[in-house]
Image (cartoon, rainbow, N blue to C red):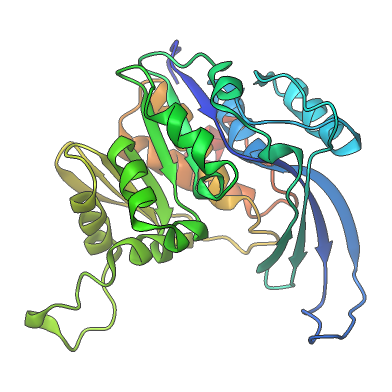
Length: 322
């Protein structure tokens, strides 16, 4: 990847994931014996670590608490050369996401709220975004109490800053006015197919094709593009099958690299981090997406969320499939 002064900045929640491997989910009110329980830095840490390992300068603009969880987040960021721009939250620790991982690699989450929710427009501004930078936004930050500060800051960003929106599950629960405000500032959308469907419905379900119940990912990608400002890049992931990219007026299907997964937690975030870093380094969107697909494929064979491969590992993976 070529060198670049463009940075990848993330505004979302740096969390600690308590990953618990279980043979199955317990019934309501029941119990199940876990195989392992491991603490990892996760959430937005996964994205900035993936970006840094790809070669980009990465910055965490979100809040980090004071305590054992915040210490773990800072330790991981420092080891990867990622700067946390905002001062620590001195009176509260970072929150925890309990991740139940089944043998199929499916995950179930329970998330607390703590210091990572203590953002202001001023704390986000410590990242000092400039034209060319890619600012990543999570739909989870669009929930109160972080919604107001984030929108205020986004709407005052300098011209030329790319806003990369990963809507997540919360996007479908937001008021229409909030959705429109964030879409108006979005220049890159990246999501899975379900999240795209929640924004636009089923593009195949029209009067001309009323019997259809599903649509292709390419249809979804183009439908999302119609909801966004002209020229917005749209990436819709399709799990192991890869993703579809809408950029420069063209829709491109980018094949994936199916693997036997051991842990899918963080796969989408790894994809986003690598995608942004590759574009920051000068690659076009379809090639950046191909490398992000490869990174996601490698990640699902590793346990833990922030376990993205390096650029050299992606090179070797792709060389073996040339």
